[in-house]
Length: 60
Image (cartoon, rainbow, N blue to C red):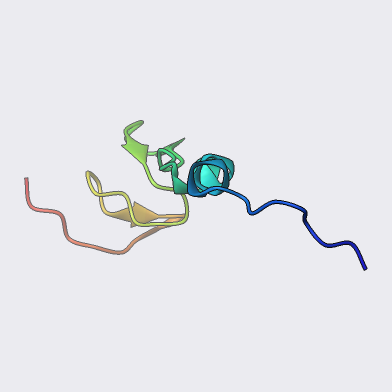
């Protein structure tokens, strides 16, 4: 079985793992009723619709 000859340094390990620490912006979609940006598969915060029905009463 292969065994490493040298210990991997902390900086080498952390730089390799650095890509997993990044935060990605959440996905956005357009509400078909009011054309505002919203998170997919959630109720629209500006009009209160989800898919084809009115779900939440939104106070203006």
